[in-house]
Length: 156
Ligand SMILES: [Zn+2]
View 1 (cartoon, rainbow, N blue to C red):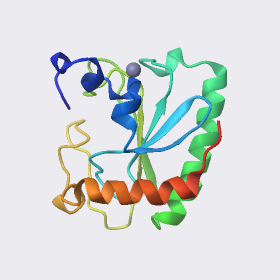
View 2: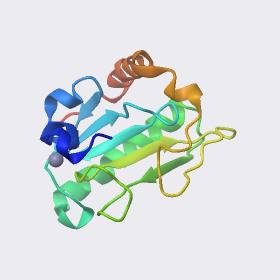
View 3: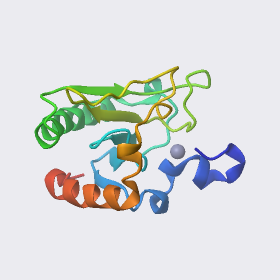
View 4: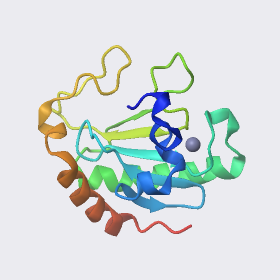
């Protein structure tokens, strides 16, 4: 990810509607659901509070309830769409020692497959990615976003 010096929008894309425009799948009352711009596997999405918060302790009860509902919906849709049989990783890197580079809370949701060969290594979410997904690039991501927008149809 870009360095802090790259500017506010670059270092915190989750506070920029423009930065999220291509990857936004749906918006609930308190959360954005985005496709990861560099998916580690097909179906790799980000669950991001609309309000800028750094960690879970800052979420309100209303935001937690919205998150619970959205996660439930995501697990159902993704299990079906990516044939993951209910298998998934949910990862959040919070705080300066976590390895995360963006200080706006976000959860990675990655549907897992039987032989997907994806493993996190040394806390670095992106360091062990096989070319087969990254090489699909932005056209793959755009097609996925278009497909998933129809499936989710979130309402605020
Ligand atoms: Zn932010």
